[in-house]
Length: 133
Length: 134
Image (cartoon, rainbow over all chains, first blue to last red; front, side, top):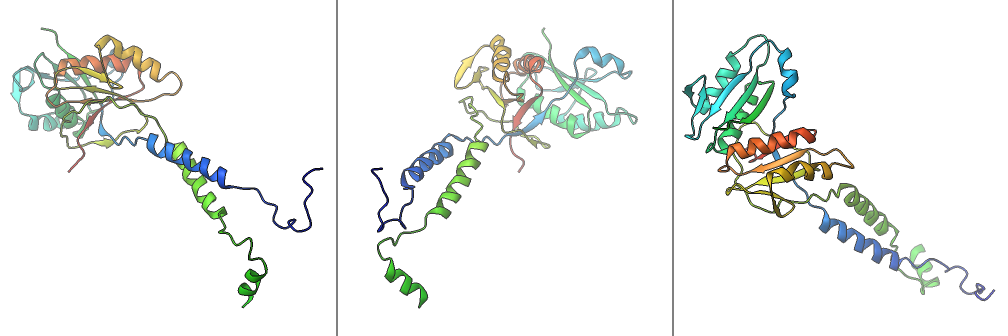
């Protein structure tokens, strides 16, 4: 054997770890840089498909959002503040489903706020549908 | 002193013990590997709507953005409405991920509704990103 440990250095044979540390540091820095922490908050619209909605006897509450920026329920304008009470008072037995029908020109911000109000009032499911004129 | 005498004996291999350092670095490395989600951002700034009840969304998600000018963005590129469903299908092929739509306050709600219904067909859940509370 070529590399016979000599008597002098038999205590000091150890693996050189510096390249390992270098590599690990490079990996560490790569993962730190590549990790993008996306912290989104938001609302989730949960509804089942339209075919399963028929087994609910109750008709879903249907809000209309025309392009004028109003919120209509059965044709009468209620404000954004009126959404939550309407949803809350619509039924004492079960949480209602809500359908938001948006027409062209309605703003997504308002639609999101109506969804939020409906969910806040305990709506079971909120569906967003587009109405083609 | 005991230590002093020992260090006099082997003064040649006086070196810092690096094993704790390696331990810590490995732990950090594993943490970052595990938490690396590689989310591709849509790459457009939107004015999120302000709502009252918002919940924290899952971090590992497929992100879309709907800009003020009614353009849909995904991974830094503008995409068409009919491309949304194939993109989601491709993104969640290996692992189920929810879809998050970053919607601009002044975007068209009908387009948002179309995106949501298109995404709903293929994704387990669809969320709308909003402003943080307070």
